[in-house]
Length: 290
Image 1 (tube, helix red, strand yellow):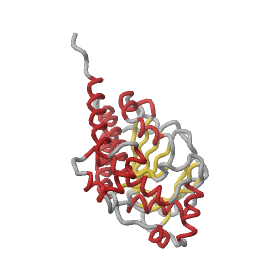
Image 2 (cartoon, one colour):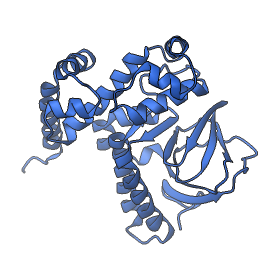
Image 3 (cartoon, one colour):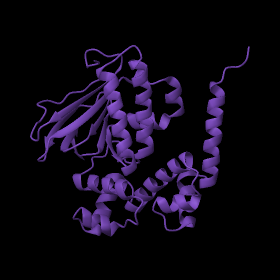
């Protein structure tokens, strides 16, 4: 079994904590921690900032950040944590997926879209099997599964603090608003609806959202929607119109305007460039004939 004291740069563990259990100290380490809370709820403290997690949430801790957890609620809290040294990630992966590596450089919560939660759980269970009964192939399989996990999080997860200033402290109610947006971006969200969900007036939420995030509610909502649209343009053959609708836009023209404003190109051009980039990347990896 791979453990903290016996591993080659990657290991994974599962634990069940009773409500009320609290780590008695904060700690830090020199590897990434990807923490998946399967059931229950907990408070994750990172660098003296508190983050509330419920079943289905993911939290990523970057190397060097001080953190601890305390568990709450009425049901046992099951969690699975993956630990990975930064240097085991292949150079080609880091080169092609600089956006993922950039997100790994900042601790924060990841909200999974509904279709992604089961995929993540299945993958983590497979990794546990390799970790707990290893053979000569297990390290390589764990590395491949680690890369798959990062890609699945990028495809199916929204990093709550995307586009939020690095050193900004986020209050609990604004974090709730960010999470609600991440989970419901495809719906016709309004400032009024979100304010009701977190028990703030629309005016106060608007002002506080801008102050703490550095962006307006509408700008952040459009960013998350366009971010998801980019994923769909790359990974599906859906029409631009269908993608606009599935990402919460009720006007394809408005979607195209927002997309161009954020990405500098139209959705169709973005899709074409992404396919060309993928082809160029694969071409670079081929070996020239002798």
